Length: 267
Image (cartoon, rainbow, N blue to C red; front, side):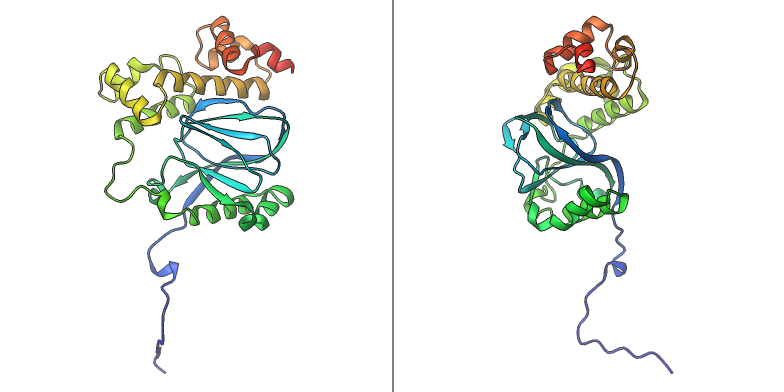
């Protein structure tokens, strides 16, 4: 008997449209009770999901400050320049991830805010019941699908200057490969085919932070993680983070975190 199908109406399914679910790579995630959350201005290639179930956390943008609301979940796109601050002890939940999907490249470099109550079920499942790749992926996909149209750069409008994107990729690769010696404005500007002065000007225009400060803050963030999660000596950490000596490292670390690295580790 031959097949016969008579449609009254039809909805095109995802499988009919040659589209794929975004490929997600989880970088880190979990929950923590924080007394301090001080991170200098930085811009990373990962997406971030932050939710604080109690008050105390703050997101610092180059031109604004967001006092994080327990009733809100925040999605931060990659290469967003921001810092963090805190006011008292609070419960912090986080997911950092990367996407291999060009459809999200046009998301504006600004935080996207969602109502906690709309995602209560998956937040509880992800952070309180069963933190797993599947539950984390479910939360990520739910938030990505709900990004409002106004949070996308219109088609035809310019995204980040490709030379600065190339510079960010070079910086990220240097940190990933732990090849930080010689990572400076002169080296990067030469690799992307710009004069050093024009590179510095364009970088600051795009990211609202100078390339020197951007690289320094990423060095300090790396050192901060090594002090907290390894037993390497301070001299080794200074070298691994790209500082020329312990004195330079201690001066820079103390200037941002308001405590010397040795005392920070003991604390």
